[in-house]
Image (cartoon, rainbow, N blue to C red; front, side, top):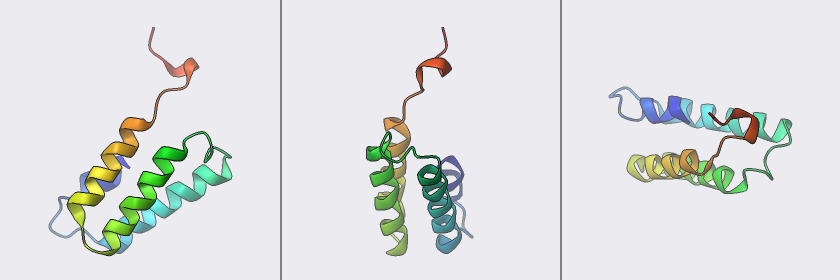
Length: 80
C-alpha cells in the first residue's frame, strides 16, 4: 500500500502497474491465509483497485489510507 500511495502523486504514475502491485499484495495475503483476518483492509484495497481502473486517484488514495489505518500490529509486534 505504501508503495502505491507514494506513486499515486507521480506525474508518470502508471495505473496498470499500481494495480499490479495491489493485486500481488492481495495474492500474497491470500496465499498466507490472512485474508479473513484482515477482511476490511482487503475490501478497501479492492475498492482502491476499482478506483484506479476508473482513474479516480483521490478515491483510491482514500481507500488505501483507510486500509492501512485498519491494519493493526499483531501482539508480538507491538512496541512495549
